[in-house]
Image (cartoon, rainbow, N blue to C red):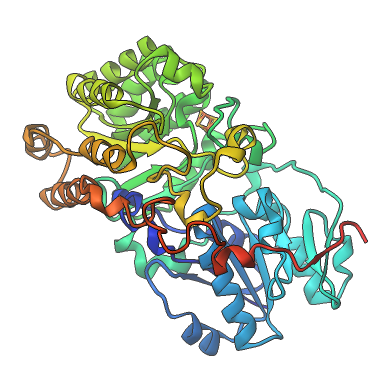
Length: 482
Ligand code: SF4
């Protein structure tokens, strides 16, 4: 079969995180690798928006789309365009949002919704479609019958042997390699060596999506994959890469023994770092360059309120360990819409005092699929998913909203560029990457940019009535298990 996998483009994400990182569509590359007997293409619409041209040229039998919450409408538009182009094409939606909120895709132009990890579902689905077998026998999908009814099939196994996962089909997006980046490193290659998380932060959907199960690839498998990668920089997309001391030590030792010379970025919890500073040392020695550190807050109360399971003292210690090892800290903090002026000042002072050169400030957002959503959904000011980008307050703010965004954007204003000068001088960052980082900070510190998508200030014409997009959320006809 000819299968087109599409990563949609969501324009509204352009203020913020897109400027900080744009990793390759790794999830789609993994799905592509799981159907090796088929002709697969990936269309990454963030870098190539030519959907109709691709449909004409490739003439797919199946189009699969993935979407995070902010990308739901963009994904719906893609699926609709595909059906308009040819009703014969089978449309499939999967990913984290579709798993958590499948009802958002009970739409006439959606044929199948895959639930959970696509590698466990997609090969069976494609087999069934190719051989004409009944869809009702494929586990972990919801499918639409000829009368417009959606049927939820039985749940299937969640067991995945990560050691047997094929290498992602990076070749399918290789022409865009130079456009993928992670913070200061461009071009970049993304790797995922583990899935799930044993922690239970209330704002995070990772542990819910993976049903609390955590799995990792063996060290040998990780190093084998690293050896296939050409770029100088690799980013580990695992939610907490340094959580398994034994495995991560083995990976570092194998990289050293093999003489692999690369730079690495990763995401970590602070307690993993403090528990094993020697592991950070080992990784710094083999090229660890930057770490996205989930600091989240600066006081024990902040951390307790999001169920982070760490303390402010542990955070401070982790930042110190990173600095001692010459690793760039990309500090991730959560801004609560109920903050007052002093809270913003405290955070700004902390970031400066701790010399955290790179920062990510996300507004506390009850994302569908999280505990926070269950607790706070009655307080939401909007159902418009494009506002759920963690750059906007989707709940009430304590301060007037304009002032909230002024103080929020002000967090990105850096008083001194000296730390960047040192990073360039010491060869940890190129001048080009430094300029890109500066551009990012300049854009993110313009408070007026946040107003357009604010659910109160930005939707003045449409505050009460649901938008056309919201109307689309209404299911057609739903009947589970028929
Ligand atoms: S935020 Fe990080 S540590 Fe917390 S549950 Fe999510 S993945 Fe785990």
